[in-house]
Each structure stands twice: as C-alpha cells, then as structure tokens.
Image (tube, rainbow, N blue to C red; front, side, top):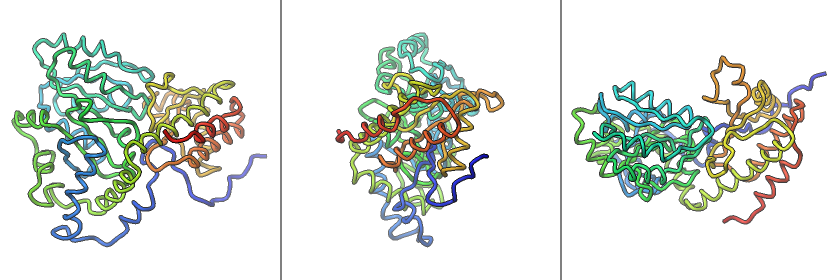
Amino acid sequence: MPQSPLPAAGRGYLAIPGPSVMPDVVLNAMHRPAPNIYAGALPDMMPDLVRDLKKVARTQGHVALYISNGHGAWEAALSNVIAPGDTVLVPTTGHFGVGWAGMAQGLGAQTEMIDFGTSSPMDMARITAALLDDTDHKIKAVLAVHVDTSSSVRTDIAALRAAIDAAGHPALLMVDCIASLGCDVFEMDAWGVDIMVTGCQKGLMVPPGLGFVFFNDKAAAARTQMARVSSYWDWGPRANPQDFYQYWNGTAPTHHVYGLRAALDLIHAEGMQAVWARHDQLARAVWAACDAWAAAGPLRMNVSDPLHRSRAVTALRLDAPMGTALRDWTQTHLGLTLGIGLGMADRADPAWHGFFRLGHMGHVNGHMIMGLLGGIEAGMTALDIPHGAGALSAAAAVISEAPT
C-alpha cells in the first residue's frame, strides 16, 4: 500500500538555484509601511548602499540599479553599448548563454556563437582564434556567463580576459554573474571585466525584482558612442544621480531597497572571503554525497571536473524519469523542492525527466545542506533508485572541516 504524504508541518525548503532562501532579517526589513520617497531615511541610505553593493562586486567602477529581473539587466547592459548591426561574440556553456545571445539578436545585434556544450568549460584558445580572425574589429563585445545556472558550469573569467588580451582585441568583456555573485569568487576589477550584470534573488538573498549593471570607465566611454539609448535603460543618470528618483528613473522599489540594505549588512558582517569559503565548503559537501551515490547507481554530476563546477548550483543527471520522480517525492513527502532540469533537454523530450538541480546559494548553512542531502537519500530509497552508501557521512566529513 502506498505511503501517505507526511503531515504538513515545519518549514518548506526551497532548494532550487534561485530564488534562494530569504533571511528573516531581510523579510522583516521589508515588512513596513510605505516610506517617503522624497526625503528622509530611504534617500539618505542610497550612497552607502551603492558603496556596499560595489564591494560585493569587487569594483571601484559604476553601478546602475533597475527594477527588473536578470533578463532586464541583460537588456540594460546591451542597450548602453551595443547598437543595431553591431556584432557580439558569445561563447556558451548552457541555456543562459544562449538566452543572452538571443536577447542581443532581438536588439538588432549580429551574434557569433561558440557552443561548448553543457558539461565542459570554454576552450580559451578557440575564443582567441575567433577574435584574431576579426581583423576589422567588428566584434564589439564578448558576452559570457560566469555560472550558467542550467548546467552549473563555472567559467574562468580571468582566463577569458587573458584570451581576449592575447588577441589584442578591443572588445568589451561583459559577464553575467546572476547565479554567482556573492557565492562563487568573482573579482570584477582584478579580472578586467568591463560590464557585469546580476540580480538580487540569488547570492544577494532578496526577493526577485532588482537588476544591477556594473561598468567601468571603458564601458562608460563606449556608451558615449551610442547614437541613442532609451531614457529608461540609460545607465548614466542611474549611476550618477542628482536626485533620488534618478537611481530608478521614477518611483523606487522601496521595500526591495530596505531588504537589500539588510542583506548587504549580513554579507559584510560575515565578510566576502568568509562568504566564498562557506559556499565552497557546502558545495564540496554536496559533491561528496553525489560521488558516494554515484558509486553504485545512475546519478551523475553534470560537470565532472570540480575546477569547473559552481559553488552556487549543482546540476545532476539520473536516468529518466527518475529525476522528476525524485523531485515529486521530496516535494510531496518532505516539503523539499529541488530544481527542475533547465535547458538540458526540451520539456517535450522524455530525457528532460532525468535532470534536476540543487541550489546551495545565499542564506544556507551546514545543517540545511545535510537536510537537503538526507531528503534526497530518503527519496532515492523510497523510489528504489540505486545509489551508493555513505553519502551523508561523506558530506558530514566535509562540513566538519575547520573553515579555511
């Protein structure tokens, strides 16, 4: 006789790769009446908020703030430096690199894509070669995703900068850090990134609704060569506001601003190095469990080499339809929501049911990860999915290590 679902008690656990778990202090900061948007505490907090946001991005450059998700940040970045007819080079490692290229095409740009698949890192020599072939410098920018949330491939952005420099090419380096900022190590200025985009709903731990575009002086100079940029997307007034409303080109997302202030306080109280180390340790615990399960079963991590795995998300493969069956079981019986397999197969393809993803980003700690892994093991046991033993012990051994 089938087991009944567990009683609906306790908190659910949203273990998808964004939106991430929201800290209570962030939610509490947002739970307030509407503030005055013309004077007082809200406008007064903005200079320090912008300073602290740039500290997370590791930049002394500029930042423009938008009421948007990550796709809006994509469009904002492109709109300020890419005109219709311009060419962009897009090396891809998953669904979101392809998506950013599609947005560039929708804005009238020509795209040259180099597809590295969904499980492998970029071959930087191929990128250098493509730029060397562009002797007329038609390519205005290289668009890259630091961590593609669909595949969990992490790109070596410093190596990509070196590949562009090896070609002696003037193209802007534009990087999507929507999944990685505040989770994986990222150094905007030190790595020579010209434009970076992100959203608030992952490593920044704020409900979806804010997009950010960081840019340096080289990118600002490229903006001056544009014949036109819509007043809404123009990053100039947003990055150099004379009045509070110019940060947002209109009414501010007031409660998101309060939430972001609380989130930045949490991040900087912990310290960026400690935030990165925590994400690294928790990711390695997830991988240790997955390696143990894979020793006697079909589960596989999508990215085989740890050097190229994200510390924010892990994409996994099971024989279809076991991935969907496992997600359904953990959701129904445990209140544990695992991420769908996104971009690894078309949803009409039965193979789609063999993929799922784990988010381990933002407001997470060791006991949460152990609970996540324990829930997965319970689901595999209940569904008779073959798996190796010792996964939880392997994860616990990693979590027990002294912080580095």
